[in-house]
Image 1: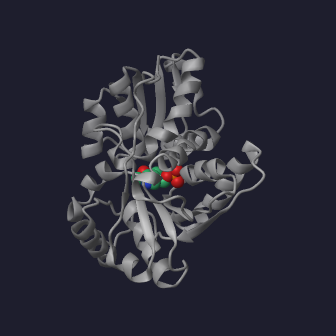
Image 2: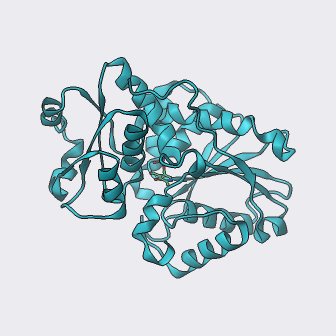
Length: 308
Ligand SMILES: Cc1ncc(COP(=O)(O)O)c(C=O)c1O
């Protein structure tokens, strides 16, 4: 049994974000704190996993095997879920053995680790890649890198419900759109599916535009059969995935100081800074209300000493 008990329903608080640059522009932002759903399991990664866990459960699997890097938020959430819910986890890691805070957690959560080297990891999209692993772990269900694809997106549809049920607490009857960080675009695609055109979904790209986020979102939308998709993506990568710069770090520090919301530099910090740039460029009308999704990832910032 890989699924959580029926009474284990992670609830992300929805809070108003108080920042001068929003107030000055007459824009209100509520932040959906996926970083706060559970002490161990954090962020969008849990929602991306849920449909994969259901598929694994239907297939009678006893656990999950998946892939990621030595700072992977996905492997971290997967290993934490395995520990929390009592199923086996195996992680295939990029590169050569190294100890990072994330790797230490994976081991402490009981995930079995296999290091593939760099060439071995690059082969993950080749046909036949999974065969030897499936032979070695016949009772495990394979989940693609990052928990992506249509299954990952379907799990993220639940985020809309989390917001709708809390709007009243803010005194909001509705909102005008979503803003969130994108790596593969799976989480954004899930919101696009949930909205079916009702509210636009804006994605801040944590990766350069040539990483193909838009085509991946399009592929998920097509596969789902959705007729109306309302979304747009903005470059937020600041020169490349995982590249940090003084302006970003200063923005994260000052945001944390004035709002009390912790951010990390790869996804949430870049996404909020990209929103600030769009607000200052006049992208949104006075009176606009947006939902900013805090997609978690805080465990990964231990790899960045300047903001840990
Ligand atoms: C903290 C965090 N935020 C956002 C994302 C982006 O999610 P997605 O790959 O679904 O676009 C990821 C992972 O890629 C992540 O780890």
